[in-house]
Length: 336
Image (cartoon, rainbow, N blue to C red; front, side):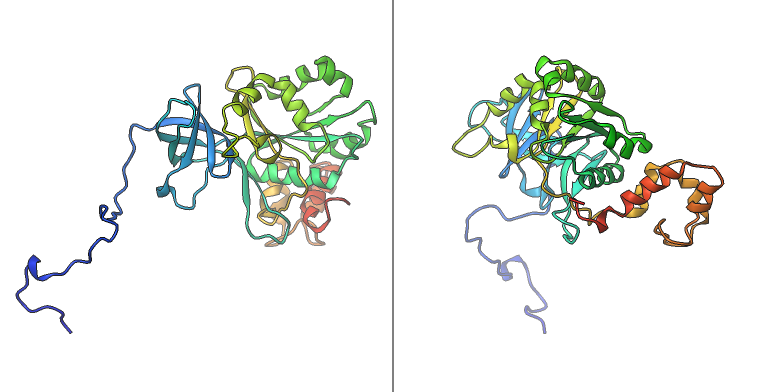
């Protein structure tokens, strides 16, 4: 049924009035070709602290980004007030493609993954050798997330004055993971800081670890002035600035292109989002042996070709054990 006659013109068509009196909505979005480039340093309740041309700028996500969220480490395009002066606010209009992501879920049954850090290339897994006791299963989970996300792991063991690192080194030695051993005395004197800094040169490094292992203390020793500069540029009324323990915080190391990213202490590290088939890519000496595996092989079953590959001397048995331990980490609790 036709609503109008055969001969209609624009005067015959009724238009719905705009109640708000503003311009009609359009799907055409501005290109923001003059947007400045920046890096997200921290995120707190919808407010993003960014570094733009050496200035600390507060920003919020533009509506046109929809559900896409910016996280610490993201390279973004920003428009608006970029002076960095108090009570100013800019807008993030684009998020650049990420080179890597560190992701986790709340637990292994949670289908919703959370991006913790973007564009980092190294993951420093900090664990105390005592007080609190090491949690190898949590370390395993962090390793799996690093291998899956494209980050190179670095094991940082603290409080060696309270316990020997030999047991952990024996457990992870066959993974060929670089490591640093520090003590509280070395941290106080600054010797440990120099050793860790050597491992961070040329990298964007995210620090992870559960509460009490000395992670944030180490980060503060590495970049004390930068943390104060970033956290000092906040408004206590709006709640911007609670990032020391509640959200990730990126800090430049020695004024170079090297960065350290402090993250909140972990209570759990879910791996529901991890595809086990990608974990073996971190074991290049074992990958050729999978060619004879049955389809959808879990690499921990009777017909797995890796057993014959190792038996023929192509790889170390300890490497296969390490792979299978990591692959099975979702089946065990983190406190095991």
